[in-house]
Image (cartoon, rainbow, N blue to C red; front, side):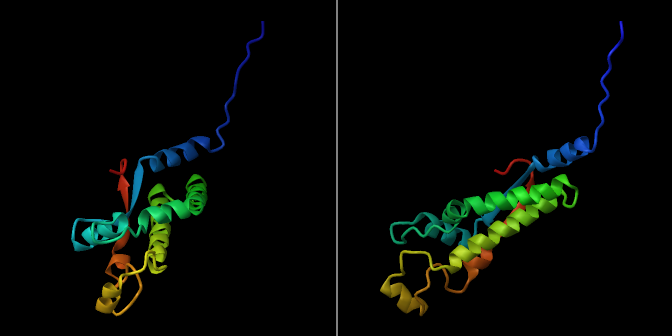
Length: 148
């Protein structure tokens, strides 16, 4: 009786899997990091308060740009699988893209409009922007381990 044997030719799959394994251990956060004055202002506007209407800029960006974000993630991780980016570099590419998208949302004059008293105080009707500190405070972090 003839013996059968199986020959496995690894054409780089194990290397790709190893690179992707490193990616699964990363977390990306985008927003205002820390707990200072800008974080308080961001939370008050993102969720609203008794005196400030909700003007979501984080959640609304994630909702409206969901397909675009998925495409960026897919294209970026194709580059991880072919070895042109490390997982950490991919995280930075994705984080920077989402950061720019959130900043663009802030720049878009998120409704509802400012109250007349706020417009008089600021000298502008543009919502979420007075000195630009919130927009500049939107950053990203690439972290090892699951994001918390």
